[in-house]
Length: 623
Picture 1 (spheres, rainbow, N blue to C red):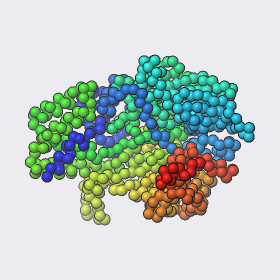
Picture 2: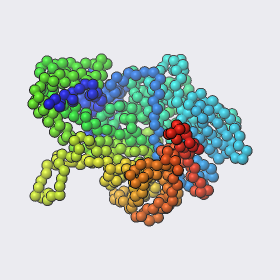
Picture 3: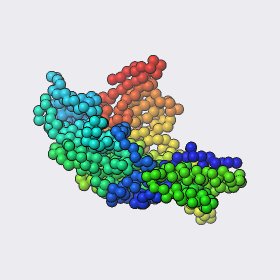
Picture 4: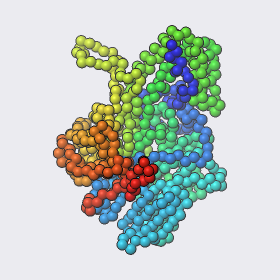
């Protein structure tokens, strides 16, 4: 009979700070929590002042006062290279990085220019002369761990984690998030590399790209009120990013992060050009030759929706004394009580009030909360939405934005072709009370009208979709209902086609036609046990898949390499496969495309593989 009490248990309910950003210029006041709207305008805005940015941090990030050298590990999302990369090795005559886009290089710990191999092991850079007379030409102590590098002509750029406490103590500044260093080397004499430029930028490494002479380094940090703007140190000169270079999506935030993209001309290193966007933790970055795309995931929390409803229904029922107390809490300065702390204290007031309601009153209130919560959740097609920003790599301006239902599983899920952005998303259903409010049976709608709010648009099980968006990121077409109940494991855009793999028990290998962006079509599919986590073109009509074998019931087995024949797109076939004998065998190439080396001319495929014996607790193979 005390169903409602569970809603008010403070130990269970810790509110996330999620306010609309339009209110960030209001300081020292309580910000009412809001949730992401499915039809919400996500056009980015720019902050007007540092005070406005600080207010935004206070409103969206609770305490926002952390200090010290705290390096956050940012997972590097991976993406499939484009079709143009398939024969890149043969044309170059030596192996190159397996990039997502052929003309857009990606940072890696090993590079080569055909004459020399450049490789990094932790804090050491080795320059090795290639060929039959291979020898170490130079060894460079980088002093700090490296994340990757780029090589162009006689210029080498190395970047990695920088967390030298004594250095920051000396300059009288302790960053909130640690830092990333950049070292630009002159390789005019390979035996004696010389550092010609150094940078230190606040934030943890996320992604990197090199297009022509321009390097783009994406870093993630957590802004705080005390030091809101990321620092940039060039040589001995320290400055902060201009607040007017920081954009934000006008959406609720639960864990605000700052994704900063820094541009440097590596052939003529000088000032850093930067642009940052406030995002959540789950982010993807894709770069074509023309644009940079940043996608961030918005989560719809059904429990928080129910708490919003609870507050709206309970507060009007309170007496004058309780209302006065709540008003006092709301008006408390944010420097004294954070938004999270305010909500927690207000929730305690609600809790005390409800405890003294009669059982019937509690039950009646619970039913009202359930009904209204259910109604609000029904408007969402998915419990996740992706907000996407399109950035001009020359001006670094955000030129367009969009939001689509679902989550992008990785960079593989985005591709730009002929000014059209193609996106694959996975939609997650709500678990609130199961299905929609009204399940529609077949009926004559002319004879039986149904109120629009009772028809649910949301998915009732996991679903995958393909979207095409124009240059302004307006949706051109959508293909819904792909592989219901299954998750996307890999995607590969090649010209006008999309190859897609989903998995639950068996592996549907799909072929889609995207030649007409306004009319996405499924051409064919193949269902076999197992799945591919990475797809790569062998030729125009054959696709390589790297993944796992599985039983018909879905139990995963050993590492699997497949060849798919798509010469007849309506009937794709698996024409060859290799399955490792060890059920625990796997490869880094399944989730890191840069670990995949393919030379079509030499008919050579190289991937790292390893296996672990759980009974002996030892590696049985690593090579």
